[in-house]
Image (cartoon, rainbow, N blue to C red; front, side, top):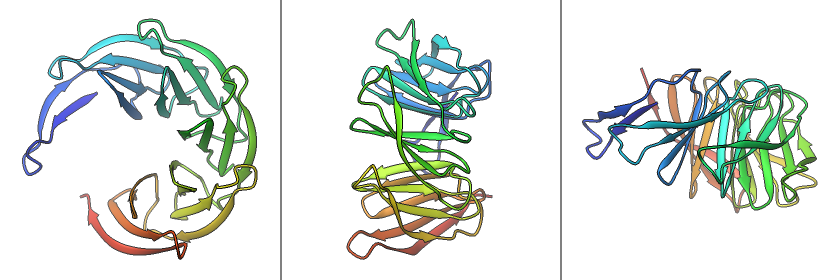
Length: 231
């Protein structure tokens, strides 16, 4: 884990760091804790109260390979590659416990939780939608093929935005979670691996560049806004 001070965006500085036992793929910050998807080492929980001296509090081994992490309330949702979605009780951060899991059809890369629903970027399985209203018994309620490997997912309003590898960005209407429908797409120049949405702007990590797009809900259309090379 590397913590970087960006108070001056023109001169970022490393504030603190902590070596982890696995291969850190993703991080989610919740309060004074950082939750890390740490590959074969599962979930790592780190106290970041003192940013210059982060402290490992606890870990929880998952079944396969932790690629993604999303925290909602007292639960961490770990995207655990071939073993699907793992739900971990983190109400006691010193003693996290797996309480349930849900196998998907392919390789679970990332999850986004909204209300009582988990939206999963499931590799060549596309988008999987899982009901987590009963945390002890999550179940797949629908899916939508994306045409390539779904690697990242972000849900905003009634749409799921999928980073879809070399097929770019896919936008799926999830207003009816039982019947998601693909509405539009944008083919980025590289491989889209991650996506974040803020208002009408879509930020896509595209291997060697950051692609910024604009999405108009009223027209269900995407247009290029700008991009920034990262090398």
